[in-house]
Every structure is written in structure tokens, then in C-alpha cells.
Image (cartoon, rainbow, N blue to C red):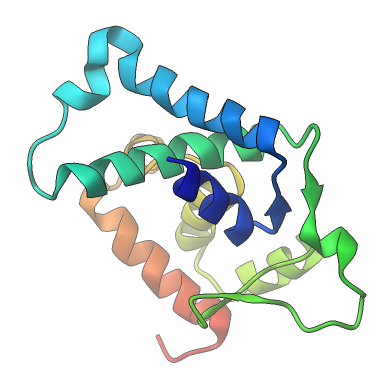
Length: 156
């Protein structure tokens, strides 16, 4: 869980101190035991338990980081303005400001832009997005993938 917290924060350009990391890990465990272990009872063995727990942890941590930036210092504040943006897995450039996001989202269809906004900026789950936009839950991932390609300027 500590690794997931570190990786999730790092991918969002956030530097964690030990106490914040511990709080995030504790929140993951609280989410796991909430509703009489509801998250664990929903495990359907479509993947390994480790993968399932990693996804759950990443989502909990991403939501917490998106809603509460208290005590966190973004890496972009520490970088110089002219330094090239880092990338996630060599593909996705980290977006440093809201105007750049808006410009990139102009390349998308309105529905794609809405899905990207809800997932990346609001931290909503596929299920929440599915319910909001009336799209099948298993269609959210492919829409996000196509939208990322368009935002990177690749052929769609």
C-alpha cells in the first residue's frame, strides 16, 4: 500500500511526507473494512487479489489527493518554469495548468471531454462516470484511451 501511495502521488506530481503517506495508507485500509468489508466481497476473481487491491488503493488515494491538497507540495512548484514536463510511462505528459488541460480537451468530442474531466480531474470511478453519462461501464476505459491519444496528438 505504501508503494501504491508513493506511485500515485508521484504520478500526480505530489511529494508526500511520512505522515501524509501513513494517512493515505490508513484511509485505504478504512475503505477496505467499510460496509462490513464490502469492497472485498465485491472481488469477482477476474484478476489477482493483489491487482484488485492495488486498483482499490490507487482509487482511494487518488480521490483523497484530488480533494485535499493540504500539506502537500506539488513537484511542479519545485521545478523551473522552462523545465520540460515529466511523463507517465513515457507516454502521457504531465499537465501543469488548467489552461493547458482546456486546450487539450478542445481536441475531444464533448462526451470524451466530459469523461476525461470526471476521471482525471474529479477522480471519479468508472462506475460513477458510467452512471453520470449513461454509458456502459466497460466502455469508459476505451473512451479514456482514445481521448488520451487525441490529446497527445496521435491519430484516432
